[in-house]
Each structure stands twice: as C-alpha cells, then as structure tokens.
Length: 79
Ligand SMILES: [Zn+2]
Image 1: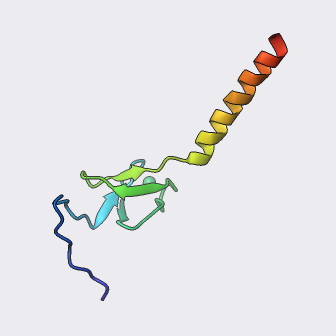
Image 2: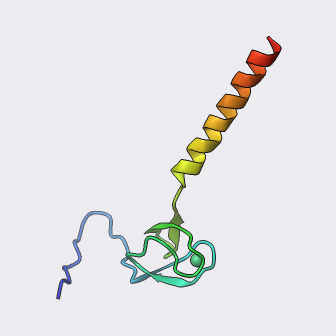
C-alpha cells in the first residue's frame, strides 16, 4: 500500500481524509480537484476541513481584457 508516514514538520497540520465542497458542502476525497456533485473546481483543504475555491484564471483574464478593450474604445471614440 502506498501509505506514507505522516511527516512531522514544524507546522503540526491536521490531516483530513475528506474535504467539504465550498458550494454544496458534500464530502469529497482529499485528492479531488473537482466536485462531482456541482462541478466546482476545488483546491486544497484548509484547516477547517473545507476545500479552497479555485480561481478561474481564464475568466478572470477575459474580464480584464474586455474592460481594457472597453476603455480603449471609449478613449478612441471620444478623444
Ligand atoms: Zn459541490
């Protein structure tokens, strides 16, 4: 079995076997990257046993770009 011994580093972090989805609060396997119920991308477990929300960088970038285009258009159109 591939069970590793828990490394005892300085930060005595609690080990969780499951993490909770930030959206629908169901239990997910600790290695899960996506909730099988609501399809939310989930990150690592936090110290409350809840999965961290993963930022969708693509939509974030698309938002910035569309704002940039809008500002550029306003400048070009009115000045
Ligand atoms: Zn979920």
